[in-house]
Length: 281
Image (tube, rainbow, N blue to C red; front, side, top):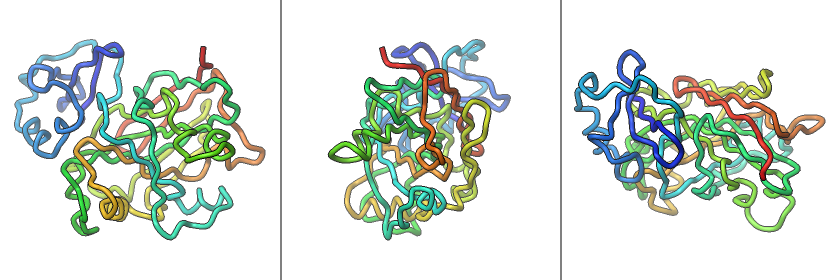
């Protein structure tokens, strides 16, 4: 299943793609997508519907973030071998976990707003994982059974805020619009192996990131199992699993976002995003 939300910002409705790629309105069946509404049980209920009988949305207009809100927006740092190398940092011995503010959530085609005082805005294509049931002390063997869906994420970052200012990375990760997600939530049963997906990002038409999730230092299984040793993951939690090489910070000379830059982001099978960078008012 490919689930999405469509409509003006703040007025989105839940929808689903039918077999022909058309949007069908789920608002008569589902209030919205978030928390328990994207649990494995909730997705099974949607899966049992006759999608062809749902109202056809001929002009869905804006495609919003496929999640109305998230309990937690987790991220994994330095999780691709070549990215760690370009960052001049050793491969971590265990997953580096940090968070983005949930207010960073944004639609896949909405502008990315470069915040005030920003000088080092950057891009990061990532495979996103949505948790489908309470997850605590899960084994690696069972970890993927706790995934509801996968998605494309752009983990937009401000490197000066992240690295050169005091405190944790969350400061450089959490500005409004710094978390474009979507366009879809693709149910886990449609992703045979999350470790074989191409991940890519084009900047102004030039490919700057082009890798595969096989380059991950820690697999999705390992990430979920590891995190569950320290916290209980909940339905609707989202995890951005790390970015490959090709970020602006790693370029020589370094390159950072400026107003008018266009990012196009894709994870194989999970949909393509497009954002234009704009200056904060």
